[in-house]
Image (cartoon, rainbow, N blue to C red; front, side, top):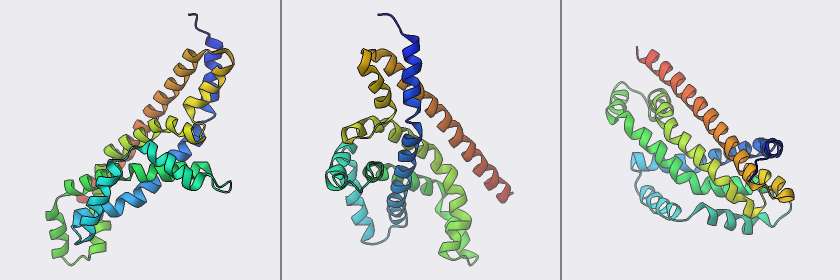
Length: 222
């Protein structure tokens, strides 16, 4: 089978035009997942009575349901209304599904800090809020960024499934070009190349942010 480079470039251009929409969905998904996952992580880390048991059960439920089911459920509940943006529906569905992984990433970062630092901060008169913002938060970000970067990749890789509810992502934008001449190999390669480039860029961004936070934390401690 001959390879049509011109069509490959054409499919790559079609896929690239979907990048802003895809990044918007990923960003909204991470925000939604963090809003849900952060309280779960804090409650489980601080072992808040009653709430911890509730969130432990909720995480077990959310972890056992595939994200595709969330997509279809949210679409059937909200997506049938023309005034509701399908991008918002997708971000909410994936945000709920991936909130468990975000919560575990944050809780793991909290556990890595060490409870003796909390005790030391309390012993010199800091309140709970001051301890979190001045001691915990500066260390929480760099510790949580590596697993959160993985969540970013998982969300991005899950978006082709959103075509089932009408979201035109990178892969489906490339494949829509191939419906004319059936050159799906070029379309798949174009989408794969664009996904790979996005992953490389995201990895560099997360590493840069992590290094900056680590440098600030080290300077503050020194």
